[in-house]
Length: 118
Image 1 (cartoon, rainbow, N blue to C red):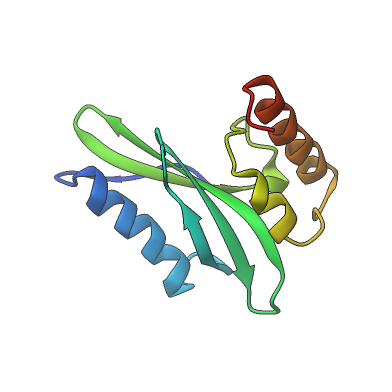
Image 2 (cartoon, helix red, strand yellow; image 1 turned 135 degrees about the horizontal axis):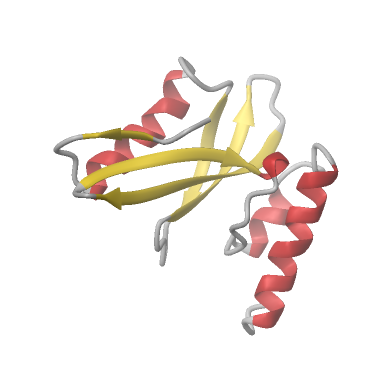
């Protein structure tokens, strides 16, 4: 998936529209159960749940390019190179869906250890 952006949005509106995509199920097969947006810095971590009740960790990037706010959805199975995910999300999600997700979770643990959070 690429980036979605629209002219004239502020950060809050872009975030609201990005989260609405999960709730509408029109573009995504997952809805967000919980979001962690403290100290976001462009990275929003989410616990995502599909219709069968399976939970995984997602990340939505929020960025401003040339005055236009946009977003990009990813999940742990894509091995995103963003590791500030709250550690408690690792315990609250189901088992990793693939090897990339398992490696990404290890990267999250290592990130928090290196930064004195784990």
